[in-house]
Structure formats: C-alpha cells, structure tokens
Length: 144
Image (tube, rainbow, N blue to C red):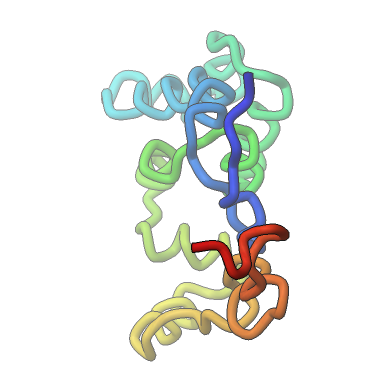
C-alpha cells in the first residue's frame, strides 16, 4: 500500500522519505563508513574497489565516482551522509551545495548572504494564485 505523497510536486526537490531511505540505505552506510580514517584511506587509494565492497547499485556507485550529489540524492542519498564524501575530498558543505546548484562556491555564498534562492518557481505546484489551489473540492462548497 503506497502512501499519498503530496510533496512530490515541489520542483527540483527530492524529499528524503521512507522510500528514499530504503533505496539509499547502502549508499548512506558507505558514506558513514568514511567517518573512520582507515576507511577514508582505503577509499582514496582505490575508490572503485572500496565501493564494490558495498551492495550498492551501479547507478549509486557511478554517482559517487562522478561526485554528482544530485544524482546521489535521486538514488537515495541523504545530504547529511553525502557530506562525508565531500569531507573526504576536503570540500566544505558550502562548496558541495554550490556544486549541486551549478554555482561556484562564491556565487552560492553570495546568494545565501542575500537571503537564499527566490521561492518564485520553487513552490508546490498550485501555490500562489493558481486557481486550482484555491478551488474547493467538488461537492464540498456550501455544505455546513
């Protein structure tokens, strides 16, 4: 039985819900393994061999190798776990976030200092004046 997911229509957003958690379990466990220095050394010495020790999908492994964090998130990665890859590479969270938005670190920092990304175009479909969002469901109007 699938649950209703009204949040799936947020443009450009992957919500880390129970389904994503199950999908990314091994990817996220791999990321957590990087908290240990010995594991970071092994990963840096031969990334593919280390990834092959984990029962991740090939898509997840390729996303890690490419350091494509947006792809990792779509494959079930959680940004707080994925941050361990960035730390292993010597990257700040700000550098990682910039890469996910197609911005340089400086562009990302400046955007955040200005108050973040505009909500325009980044809301749930149906918000802000969309007639569909403000209509009452059929049969509910006028009932007391």
